Length: 235
Image 1 (tube, rainbow, N blue to C red):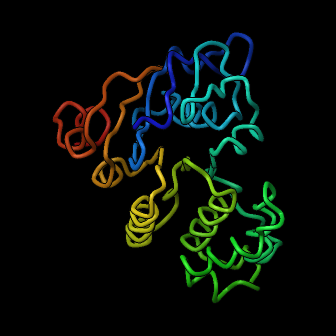
Image 2 (image 1 turned 120 degrees about the vertical axis):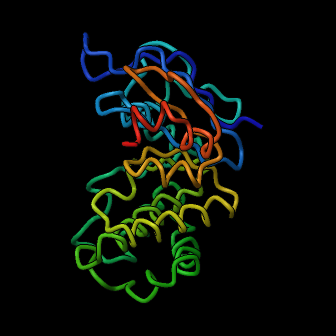
Image 3 (image 1 turned 45 degrees about the horizontal axis):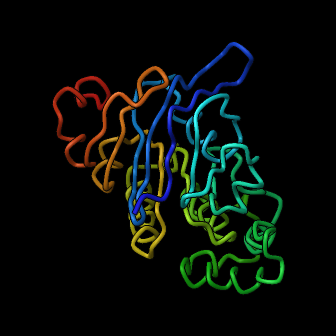
């Protein structure tokens, strides 16, 4: 079953600057889908367009069969889309628990219950529940950011370069956490700088070039494709 459909979306950050020039992708229930491509291709802009942070000037975005194209970021969140940005994705001066609680804005009565569910999923966060988020390591902050994204009980989670700035070992651990999250039933749409590693855990992938999806395939097939490797994967 197809959960998310992005069809011919044109979007950008100004009246004349269109970063996305007719982008089309989809995400099925249970999938991990990774978007790769050169710098400036519009990968993060596409995620933001799905999240409602960048307005689609043309095209259509549907989630679970419902047209959400006109909805703003709050509306998308209420519809079931959760976006975890690359930077500034936790509140450094708040505790781990406070970060989780504030992220359950759509269901204040369920804040404590969902926070405890997050602690069960990520015991490391439970151990640091009273620690300020700024004291966490890079990997721990990313886990917290993902846990915050789960506090709205989403149908789909968007991850923008989740392993940016992490050591290879920590990045591998985060990829394992993403797989575990997906195996629990949550579809994932991801932009990731470590493209080979991301495609290896992905159901499917898209190559975005100049604001359009130039090609798609299974994650392992894209990772192994000589032309894709030459152009985008450094080998």
